[in-house]
Image: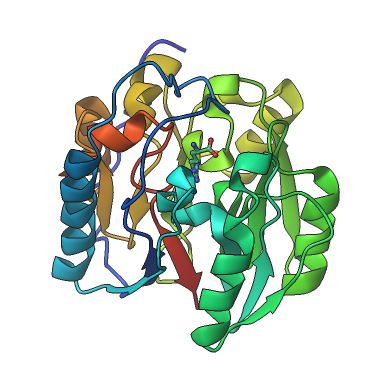
Length: 285
Ligand code: ARG
């Protein structure tokens, strides 16, 4: 595959649905260890720039009418800004995280405590999983990534806890180590239009590519070259797609598909291997 799939289709009338997110200020953000290929502790990080860029993302959501709840940042947990990893929440029930790497394990309890304070019932996991980093909801199902962080056993556990069917997808490229770095839910299918996703085929094993092809024949397939800057690490409300500012070609293709791209510069947070989606946990209806 060499170019973005730009098959001509009539521009659809996309509509937004108000969302509820949880975010965590990068008060203690640094890159002091490397648990993914984007992280290089020898590259300096400007924490105050990270804070300004993060504040911009939060303000963007609020200006689109979404609600943001904050999770207090813990010292000694530089990756806590990537709030998506803390759980998967659907309605008033959440499947808690259990992080793969010791450096992040302390984050899980803070997430569970915060979600409980919001009235959400959090199930403690027995298996390794990194929340919405590897679990994306769409229609009545959950797309689940495995290969680098989240275990297959956790897919089954999530299905049981949230009472939803889970489709397991195997990730094979270390640069796309969480599902949300390789696949973006553009329309969750819970409104008037069918579910719609974008993904990087080469990030998946051959059988998982087939699964995606069968389930989403009209999906937007994005070549690896376009997925640099973590273009796919985007957050959609059904109409507005908030995405990394560097992803200009992806933004253009989204516009052709009827979406309104909303670029946000998170260059500093990219140094930790995350962007828009990583910084955003959605509390799904
Ligand atoms: N440095 C973090 C890690 O490697 C980045 C997490 C990105 N989060 C995400 N949802 N993909 O764990």
